[in-house]
Amino acid sequence: MRILSFLSARSQICNVNGELSSLCHLTKSIIQWSGIGPTLYVVMESDLRPKFSNNILFNVEIVVEYQNVKDWTRRNGMVINELKT
Image (cartoon, rainbow, N blue to C red):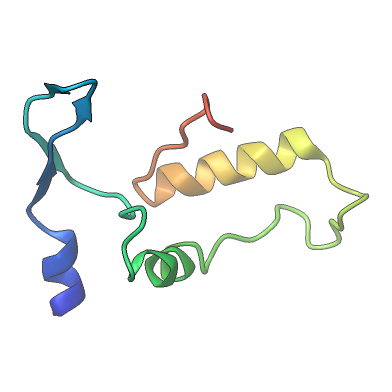
């Protein structure tokens, strides 16, 4: 129950060059630099699997696998920041 309360009803304000943004309510995310962040990531991505189980580092159809990851994020209510990907 504590994890649920940690993830619920959160909001943030960003400070850029002394200018504060308006209050933004967060509905989903992993909080960067939080102590629980790495554990939440492991739990959230635990069902992410390659599209083809025989994919290895040098035998990856990158376009197909990337689409697989995007489909997985949609099914799990997440969004990929494609500007950082």
